[in-house]
Amino acid sequence: YDKAPKQETGADAPQKTPKNNTPTPNSELTADPNELYIARYAEIARAEMKKFNIPASITLAQGLLESQSGQGELALKSNNHFGIKCKREWKGKRVYHDDDAPQECFRAYDDPKDSFRDHSLFLVDRERYADLFRLKQDDYKAWAHGLKKAGYATDPRYAHKLIALIERFSLYRYDGRKAPTPRAVDADTYVVQKGDTLYSLSTLSQDNLFMALTFDEYCLFNSDTTILQYFLCYVSHLD
Image 1 (cartoon, rainbow, N blue to C red):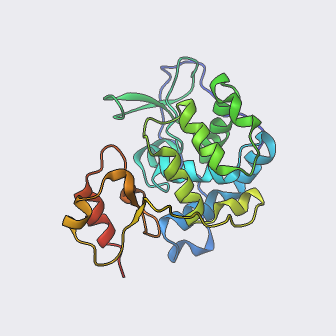
Image 2 (image 1 turned 90 degrees about the vertical axis):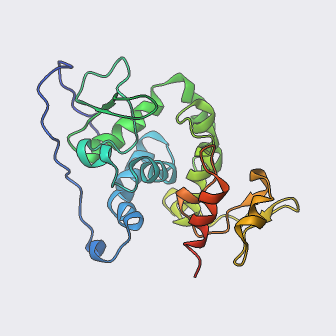
């Protein structure tokens, strides 16, 4: 896929609801939304990696997170899988959606492939992301932290969420690398365990809690998460 997304000549041109031309894998009836999303878009992410040197694992993780595994409103109605806003230079289709502010302008695409290509161009064409392309292509952790540092998202846990997704679903395999060495838990970090109570967790600071779940982005701590919300999310995933 070598062409940039086709753009309208006028910002106010009549809008049509874009078709969601998503390929349907054979596993659609059995896969969970995350696995289904990966099956649908892994090859597109790999093609973008070959052309623009952006790790496929990062592209897939961002797509999973930003589009809510393809089930978010922006993805379903406008094929926008990366939460990219209109910006001053955008002349293509647009939709309006509540985000950091009410009714912000977001880019709309005719096909999900266009969103993946625009995501690549969005990173390549902006100086603030230039340092990313000095990193190793298979260093997904450095890329995740680099994206956060460059201001791609306001969520303080954005990099950690991307890394958790990559490791949960082994997305690094699409970069051509082997499984990373499991990270160690330092002596000052408490690992949440089955049998912990809300009270016992409430006595710990947010910085000393380590997520011991398989993965669920809503169980990751961020500035808007309370200990109660985390605990309820955690216990709902216990066997």
